[in-house]
Amino acid sequence: MARTFDPFRDVDQLFTQALRTPASTAMPMDLFREGDNYFVKIDLPGVDPATIDVDLDDSTLTIRAERKPQAGDGVQWLTRERPVGTFARQLTLGKGVAAESIDAEYTDGVLILTIPVAEAAKPRKITVAHKAEEIPGTVEPEA
Image (cartoon, rainbow, N blue to C red; front, side):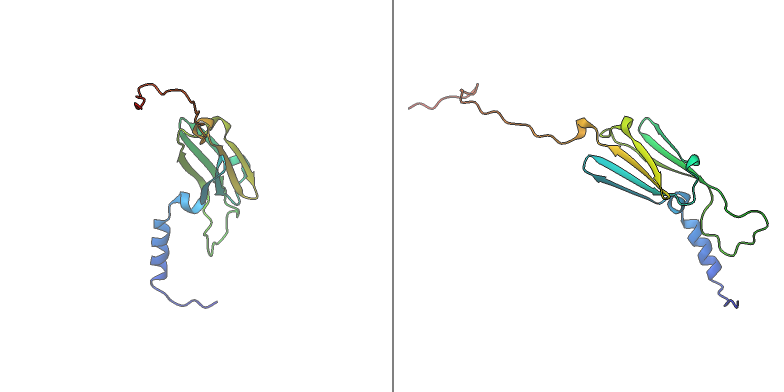
């Protein structure tokens, strides 16, 4: 296979790889709220579920996972874009979540964390009572 000489290709690849952080390349994440839950979806293809670790320390949620190399020794890599090693992401949770009820599920290479909104943080309706009595501190108009 003939390759065209491009003196900038290697430099471009070097800068592209240097600007990527391990978390952004190895653990892309979506975070959204739907109803009374926040959802965190983290792509972890090729990760052994036994290596996934989710910890909560005070208000810091830490997700760690390890992707091991698939090929053995003596392999000559032509392109290697899938990062290997141990990766971590941290999220700081606010006070409005029910941290004791966080649920984690790993399906088809995606880790899904469900973080419920705390009861105290949910919006609620306050009813206004109507009384026909005189309101203290008001003066009745004279006739």
